[in-house]
Length: 416
Image 1 (cartoon, rainbow, N blue to C red):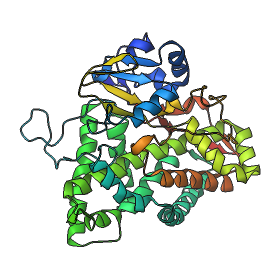
Image 2: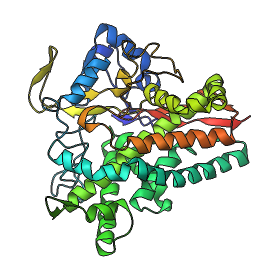
Image 3: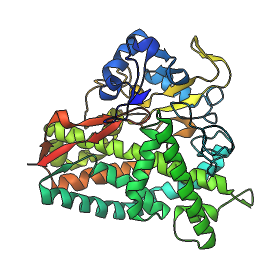
Image 4: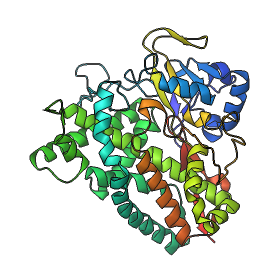
């Protein structure tokens, strides 16, 4: 198997039957999954594939919501990746690269109670509304600088030069990472998520993140600073300091879950505003719409598909799920279910009933939702404040990446 170097998508046999042989890395799925979900909801709401180790793809809101809440039958501790994980850090195993090991995974998202419960509790203060309000100052100044550059040239890439520059620097700020490392972290996160199907790239990203965090944790142990790593090292559970591997896993989660996911949401929103001038102008004319508009962008362009790997044969509503297979938590597809969202394929800026699943559901609902919402809102506000009129240079030049996280990779725009 080889990869398409322009999109990262693996070159495999094309899908001919989405109900029995889907592939979320297929270029057709990456480019436009909406019609595929619509077709499956009517014909086969729990699609199956043997690709990537075997998995099931629910497309109805009710199914995704129910599975997300059923942590007994569908736990997270067995793996959350949509493809089989790349083995890293096992000495002597053929093809494995020695590295510090994330023995605890990336809690709380990859953990079940009780590990999930207390690690999530440690994360929440850093993601509280009060702390996020502090990060907003940094975020707004960053967005303003990025907009300056686009304005100076009269054009730019709203994905690679704007959306993708924001979360990596915000997360880096929280972790105490130098801004000069932003490009390196961006590539590592892309390796882990966008190129999950490429063993060498995924291994490179995982090893890069682990080795960097291992060194950073050592530095904070010697000289504590005012950042998330130091806060974790000074935290306790049951009267004991939390272990190094848990600290590393939680910091890795902040990087992996907080960067590509948010830049994809920002990028999708920027694409929508460029491609739909009526919505853009309405949002400028009616700034009070911003809160509901942000929720609608999150619903319509939810980027993340998680997974639950099953370790024992089970079933869901008559679907026989084999041990080792995954159920893909298709939050983006659930958000387009017309049974729950009238005119689901339309972006309605003042949509009032909007119980979207962009941040997941149940105990594993995204702990960083406050931060993600703030970054998306500030990114839109700062761009529209300075660049109210812009459009796509050429819709054909817009490119998307998909798989576990879907979002635009390039959005060439020009200031009008």
